[in-house]
Length: 173
Image (cartoon, rainbow, N blue to C red; front, side, top):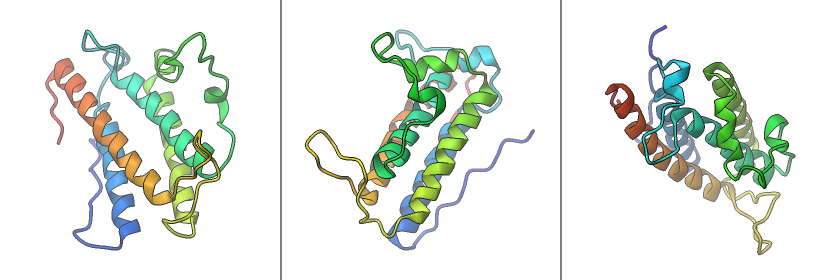
């Protein structure tokens, strides 16, 4: 299978279009770091860190659900993520990757991203407030969530770049 192309980002456009294009670019760049890896390399760490590309993918599937499904849309956390035992394992969403193969990781990630895209498209505006609140009872607007997710992916793309380069020298495109 050929390596998928990264999506384009327009040179100009309205705020919503550009924010979603940048977020989709980072999502694709992030998942690209797993392209061509076997199961062992997917779980390979770069000591002293316990991060692996697989752990990062399961983490970001969880983060997509938290921000778009739970906080923004006010829905319940789906499936396996809902039953995680955080007391037994504070990194439970990452630990899942050790029992999920690449296909399951990508399926879970894609499902979370698909929901996030539907929630974004269905929002009345970037000013739409989240259903959920923070500990102080304050809501987030969609603009804040999109910017936060771009920041989250940018950080984890850097982690994934370092791990991937250590695995086989493959550099980010």
